[in-house]
Amino acid sequence: MRPFFDLLKKIIQTGVGKTRFLMAAVGLGIAMLLILIAIQAHTNFSQLLYSSKNQNETADFLVINKTITNAMMGQSAKSIFTPEEIANIRKQPFVQAFGVVTSSQYKVVIQAPGDLHFATDMFFEAVPDSFLDVKNEDWKWNEGDRTIPIILPNDFLNLYNFGFSLSQDLPQISQETVKALPLQVNISNNQVSDQYMGHVVGFSDRISSFLVPASFMAWANQKYSTATAVGTSRVIIKTPDPSNPTLVKFLEDNGYTTNQDKLKFSKTRMIVQTIVSVVGFFGLILLCFALLVFSMFIQLVIASCKREIQLLVILGTAPQQLQRYLLKQFVPLYIVVGLLSLLLLAALQYWTAAILAAHQMLISPWPGVLVFAGMAVVLALVYVVNWLTVKKYVNNI
Amino acid sequence: MQIQLNHLMPIPLQDKLRQRSSDIWNREVTFQQGSFVKIKAPSGTGKTTLIHYLYHIRYDYTGQVAVNGQPWPSYSKNDIARMRQQEVSVIFQDLRLFEQLTARENIILKNVMQGKPYYPPEKIADMAARLNVSHILEQSGKTLSYGERQRIAIIRALVQPFQCLLMDEPFSHLDEENTQRAAALIAEECKARNAGFILTDLDNDQHFAYDVHYHL
Image (tube, rainbow over all chains, first blue to last red):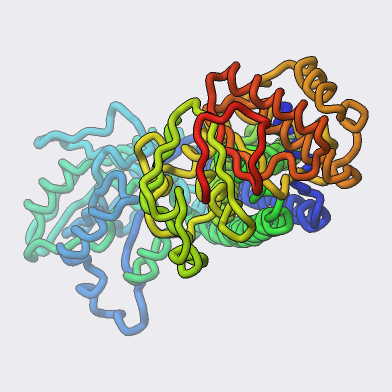
């Protein structure tokens, strides 16, 4: 076909409106770059969020409760989750594991041993063991045991050590000391009062509460509770991504609240997602315009050579030959444009990776697989649109 | 390649043509593969129209033109293109060369249209020499005289495979000597392919050993 196409080149002048065509090609390049940037930014962000290099643990635990408003004050029943609400939380896609926080239905007083003269009213809560960040062999309780293992919130010890003890001129206490202290635990209801030994086995960063094993809680609630069973007012969930905007929206919609600090990344993420979407959207719009200009250019070329093309067809040139020839005039340019934008993106990505690495944020210095897929899709789209246009106008001659 | 006419009648000329008798119009005619056919026609009786119908670039007729047993409209565009590259060639009365190509390029266009060249360059040079157009091969189609164009159009029609050659007053602008040379070349090329032709002209002539004569 080469000699024939060489002759066609002299007959079908594709030079008409070449500036417009080149401008459309530049437009295509920018469009493709914007789309690829949007895809790559998405990939990068996912890497920052989920990659094991950037996070010590992928999942996070959130304790969720209803927001206490002024209207609810004094009506503790209003802060309790109904079974339907619990079922609803359980079935959300972002909930990997679900547990209820059981609170004690009896009075607790803890006393320090010997002559420390320290006593305080307390409460206990229990969560399923899988939600704990403290692993300790002593964390177990069987019926009949007089010693209750206890987990304290880390914050509690910090409040004491850096707030309370300094202002009261009391000694600061290390974690080891607290663990070694035998505590006296008085559990009572209005009729009976029993004494147990308390043993602090660890400090939790995850759950801000005084925790005892679930087995003890179940047993003690049954033994000491005077009221009928009280509902759940706090639940704990495990979620792969606490910055998931769906999660944040779910909490807001239902008037639930949790440790806001864990959700703050969500806002950043939404802003980035919006920007990325806007960039991608403009890329798509620009792509549409580029496609339109290409179609019009092809139409112009064919219309301006209508007589020549008619004579070629009369002499026996097949429409397929003409289509192939015309596509061959345009398609290499698209591929070059595609490769150029890919190169540019690769350079950008390399540069971004270097900058982020300086801030301990690790992303791949190479464009992601999705970028290549995106480029292939855009090029395929451009090819198909061109092919259809050429086919349509050649067949109309 | 067999061409059959089945009561073919040009719509614009039908009133005029019904008043006179014709061997072609409104009759059943079969042009056999390989036969040399001469159609003699006075001006205005639809000579060029007939060639255009046979080559399927005009469609304003009643009746039917069947090629190899099938009417023209039943062939697809790509089929028609293949047949124009492989089975049927044409010399138009108005020649239809590309003015932006040189004479040689006009010839080569048909020589390579179906893929690899049908004749080597030497053969084309030889044909040009026989028709006395070697010296104008590099000139652009625009600058050629009508007689020169006519000879280029003849060579162009002969550098492709065909079973049937359609010619519409192919020697109208050639002197006697060049006509003889061109006719000899055409006859030779047809014989080499075992092909036939259909030639329309105004008058009687002795350029070929015709198998069949018709009056349009």
